[in-house]
Length: 313
Length: 56
Image 1 (cartoon, rainbow over the protein chains, first blue to last red):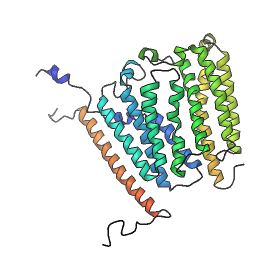
Image 2: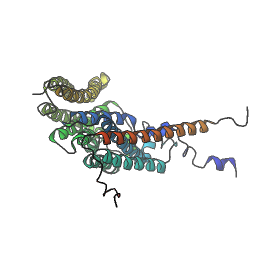
Image 3: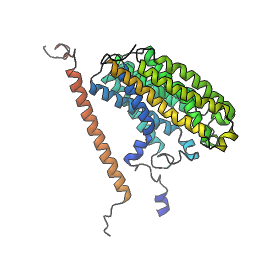
Image 4: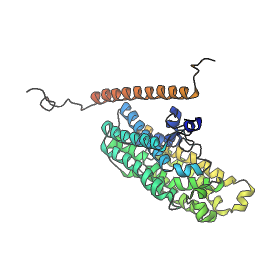
């Protein structure tokens, strides 16, 4: 046996560090899942034992992480092509595809079963559907097929507050659907603004992105239309049981700012944007991060105030 | 330099083993905590003795 034959045998796989497996869970996405699921749980009209609530959020986070691992397993081929994703554990050769699949599927099953046992099977069913939606509907089907991939695929990231609500109430309500719609309508303009100023290599990997398939003019129009639809939902939430005067004040300020930047983006073309380094697009994207965080924080604040009979209509 | 020099690979394995150990410990603590929380919650009752197989 030569040294070369030893070196050639699946170098790197089977000996990944703990951090590599953690990276498979897409921790940054998980932080959004944890926060919005927590707010969904807190906004619900039924209280939950704090430890059960903690465990439920943990299982939702693990379920979200598992779908991230399964997404990386399925997308390993295109992750190798794109610069942004080429250092992920699978394309970097630290974890094999079969390891990632086994890891993802084990965590997914465990998270769903444990959430069902700890809380109820409506919440567990929603978590199972979220994982299915992200892995099968988005990753396997839509992502490489349609430039609307972000729109429909965004639903996967919108389910956590509904799951949090279901943990407490055991069901689905108009308020939890509105929280879902808030994230669902927020996702496309958030990503399209990013796509306008970050030059990606999605086209090289054969992933249709709106900026490439329909051009930036169409993308700018899409951002404005989705922002207007998002405004209607964000303001509508204020007049439900999870909203209130504080939420309404936050929503009015943020939505006016969001709309202003969306109009700016719509009125510009690439030449103007290039000249100032995509300033409006960058401002819109940065604001979109605060936008979602502030809306959900306001829902949480309304729930906290309501428990002292201080807020609400 | 001794023969037992630790390779970077061994450090990674150690890190992974410690991490996994902590996760398993966490799972045990979590299930224990859930059991306590469930049994102390309002409306919790033990199943009737005939259902759990005693009292023949």
